[in-house]
Image (cartoon, rainbow, N blue to C red; front, side):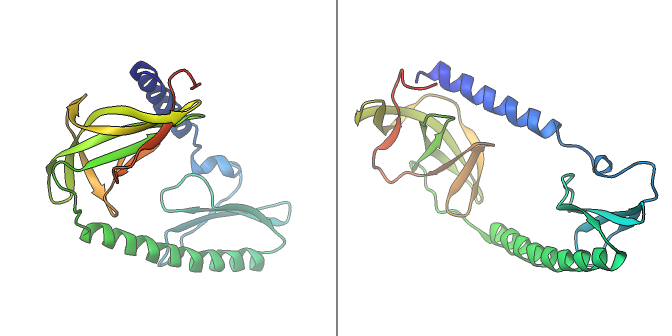
Length: 210
């Protein structure tokens, strides 16, 4: 695949992600607007439950955090059944929040070990595999500057190339990126970069992509 095709695929992927984000409905979409809504926000959790009665039955929709997609949307035979599910969900969310807080603490305390000259690779593509190589040009406490570099084909088979990085052969400008645990760098919504071990990586050969 040539560079122009790679750029076009990145643009399409970004557009599809943005379109998907815009299609998310707000919370009021999931319940009637002409009934009295009881909003339940259990203490110590990030849960919001919107409950209402209709035709003698209870209905409720649960949301977590800032999400507009519901955790669940159920009908109940009575209020006691609704309250039981809310309590179970509260306990589940508390566990989720504890795990989330632990991960946030780990990220705050994390310090990467990347060095100037280190090379990373990113594998991405839809119905095909593309490899990008990047080289660290400057380091900070939690971030690095990286630049894309050339690659060369060192073997392969029908429809597949084995490629390696060509250090210091830069093909684009510096980018500043935050380094995540494991020395991983999130490049886009659909691709991350990882430390390269020097071994060839497989990608779809020119003319075999979609």
